[in-house]
Image 1 (tube, rainbow, N blue to C red):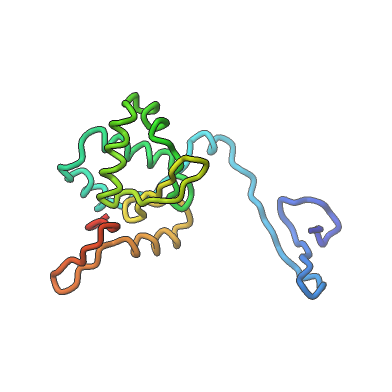
Image 2: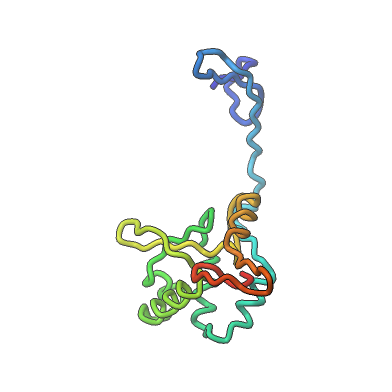
Length: 166
């Protein structure tokens, strides 16, 4: 891509992009410079308040389970993907791997995390978007709505992969 003004500045300006027909189409691009210091603050996650309250009130979750959830949120990748081994989580929390495995199994059964594919012998997970979201907010809203349990006529539809209000 070349700047239409003849320059090679890739931060902003009017550029020409050649489409499939071979014609140049004008495109305006702007890539803002990172503000100094913001990158050291770390990432961000949008959490849903009612889901957080439901987790706080869930009596079947013990302290280790809550700590595992916090690590999963802290290590969350875009679109809520998580790629951490049970050993890595255990090392971060100073908790033995069998205890982490027990917590992860419980979180899977409750629908707090969803199973994903294995990548290089490490199982991946996805934090249920009804709890929190990292990524495009419009996509997060759609994903959250997909993962809410529907209440129709006072009856809850049962689905093991979905949370009550999370």
